[in-house]
Image (cartoon, rainbow, N blue to C red; front, side, top):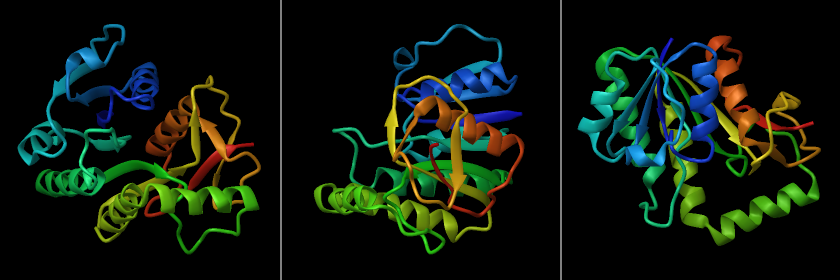
Length: 211
């Protein structure tokens, strides 16, 4: 499958690119600078520089793809509405080129109606996030709402604290109460690719967390 990965040079982007290549996908890694993505050469990898905030760059990257995966995250220099702006560009480009499948990563602090009641620690963490980083949380919520209003085949993966641990495949997904409000970036990448290859959560907002 031909896939474009936005946020490819980030800490979740690296394992996502690596695992996608291991599974035999043709990957376009969209990055701000090619030096930011340090990964062994593969004939199935194309590294494309650009800005997610520039529609022409996004449109050029999306043309000819089968699916879009986004693991973008805020940095100290990014605008407060990074996720909203980038999603708008992705959606517009996907619609222009007839591409329907998108899987996007966001935080577990973005809640939905299907959620069950979480434990005290998870609830306190969510409240703290909304208080300390309200603008970034609001951007994530807006991104979720923007995608959900489209006719695309979208999946919004919601993850708690991301760790640098190894791939375990020992995680749970869906709408559940966290036993451990954390998950490795490798496992997130694994789930996103599983969802791409065998869709179970089209037009849904699954949580992911360690068992």
